Image (cartoon, rainbow, N blue to C red; front, side, top):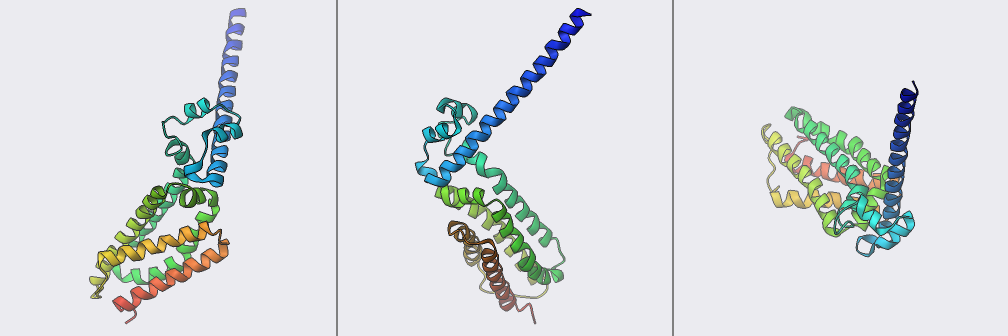
Amino acid sequence: IITMLYNSVIMIWEKVGVIVMEDRYNGTVTAILEAGKKEFLTYGYEKASLRRIAKEASVTTGAIYGYFPGNNFFHKALFDALTSDTAEELLDLYRKEHRDFAALPPEQQPARLNEITEQYIPWMVNYIYDHFEVFKLLLCCGAQEARDRYFDRLAAVEEQSCRDFIKAMESLGHSAEGMSNTLIHILCRSFFQQLHEFVSHDLPREQAITCAVTLSRFQHAGWVRIMELGE
């Protein structure tokens, strides 16, 4: 009986030890992430300091390398930990919206364009403002090439959606004369550039939504005019 009680006590202490270690690990990681976020927002990607982050998080610089390994942790591990999940979620949701749109019968797509303008565009802006600090990091405080790659990925989804839409409308007898791949790329890329403007200038949420919807209506009207969808 004594042996059983002893073993039970040992097992309990081992479990307690694991919980304490996990809490300590999670607390340290959270402290580093918060310190890293503050550092990037204050000094930007290029001027961020490992020592300042360590001091803010009350850890050693070696501990940071332990939790976020890599010779250039600023360029990858830490910055990705702060931004990638949220950025990828928006991209995945954006892809889904366009897949759902492409799956509609061609004759239903023109009307759906208006719904996207009035409903989905505000949702997208709200998502960005609900995660404002993450997108401030990604779009304003990170490396320019990282921002450009993200915009390129968003624009690629939009470009493919435009080509699919043109093909669907052509099946109904409409024409998209003059809508070259180059022009489609320019239009799509410029649409996402507005996101950078909103975030970099700290535009109030409602003003950003109004601007985004207005620009989307502009583009919607262009599709209607070019492809004579209202006729």
